[in-house]
Length: 283
Image (cartoon, rainbow, N blue to C red; front, side, top):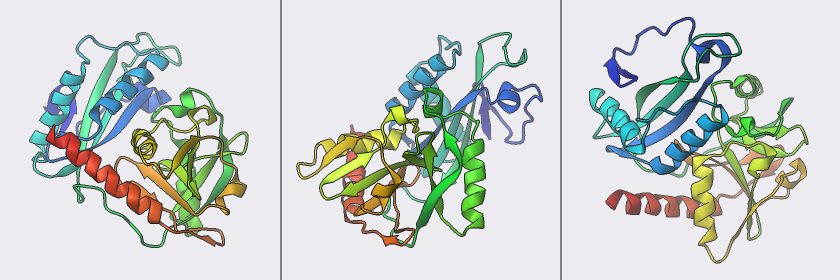
């Protein structure tokens, strides 16, 4: 069951061929994890969505409050009998149909779809995970490149490249040849007691899990968090590299080219992340 503008409909409901998300990529989405009816990091997701809609010059409806959209997500979970388990939620907002590149209106509609997932909390995945650079195409840094739109051509082609080359993932470069993120999340590079991640100004996604990890590291006395450009050369000098997103949490990279990495910092941060979630869910 899928939620279209507040109405629960069968999942196979057909969208109009004139849908602007389908035609022009004129849509935004949030990928959200829920656990037993709790929406993880909901406030951060909500405010990122509102900021993204403003950047895309979409009209934000008066009823698009945090409480209203939370009700829509929970209602969709209930209709799919997922309030007592964990789920992956996709909240998509798209500009209403009409016009070509220039829309007739800036009014929007939304869709909430849900799928069950296995893990209630984040689990350290320490199996073999190899990555390399994806250098066929580059991200041009701008505010638009930091948004979660449904124009993900680079990620699709990069994922095919990774599969063809027997890789688990690829790291994406911007036009300045800085490493900005993985195909499915932000990246963090650990060297000694410094944990580094690409700045938003380099064009990386303004990730929700990225924000959580930055906040956590700021409260660890032994480590310093740095938001600065990452050169490919730094990857082979690093002690650890890991990928973050709201579904898997932290995904340690075990191999990049000939370099093999540890996962001690990843393990420590994952424990602190799960503690943070438990504390927030009891409030």
